[in-house]
Length: 350
Image 1 (cartoon, one colour):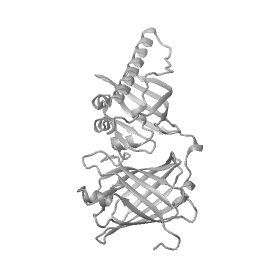
Image 2 (cartoon, one colour; image 1 turned 135 degrees about the vertical axis):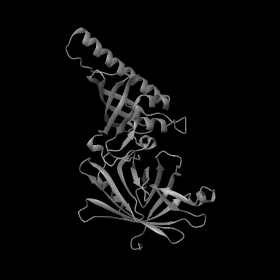
Image 3 (tube, helix red, strand yellow; image 1 turned 90 degrees about the vertical axis):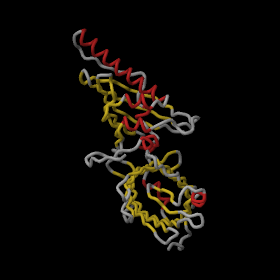
Image 4 (cartoon, one colour; image 1 turned 30 degrees about the horizontal axis):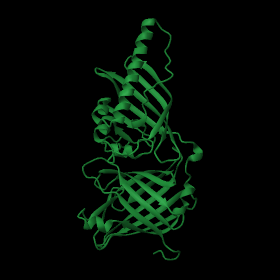
């Protein structure tokens, strides 16, 4: 997700894209394209345009087959040098770079999502530019509800064939299935947070730090950090205000302030966080299969970037399991973190 261009949306890594439940670029291109409309023209022109549509269709089929085989080289070859992917949150990743950094899942037995393309079409803008549009329904194995979205892919003809120059994707889940900010009311209160495995993590020689939302938190075999969290509504109930204090064993600490609210532009639940260390992050929240999922893009104090997917599983009472999974590509991959949030009895907060 790193980018040096301030006028472009932040890029995400291949793994960040793969972490999303609706990864349209990896699922979007069906081997069957319907609804081509060929304008009236001479027989020769019709034949030429029909041939071009068939060539794009063939490239589309090749892309899908490469995805099914996790053939990263073949995938990369189907992108132009600067072809990019932009999702509905505005995040950007280079298609070729993303393909080369991706790979098959660690567990080869993982079932692939089932998807169905509907209303797909190819339109030729010129002899060398085509647009493929369509809707997609994605069902993740084990999920009871499908995710819905649309995509628009731009194909350009280069010397060695048709290539993807751009992909735009967005979710279109029915409004009635979208979570409301009020559904996060259970967060209100004071919480203590315990990092599971922090002691074992350090004792096993994995280092004296764990990474949460891109931030490195010191741990030690004998004394893990103390984490306290307080969540309140703002006076107009338009934002949840979360304050987190992390105190390390050596007496140092960090504070993180967060606002969670509904973005009127995208109609999504989003959060904005600012740390006392100078870092900041932004996340999109969604309720998926009874769990809250936030996809976080962080900027660290040194200017580097990180991305994580966080899962909150609320027990309906006074407990919540929090898991943070790193999704950014690179050699330095932090270990996934699991924590338990326990609501403090009223009147015991500091």
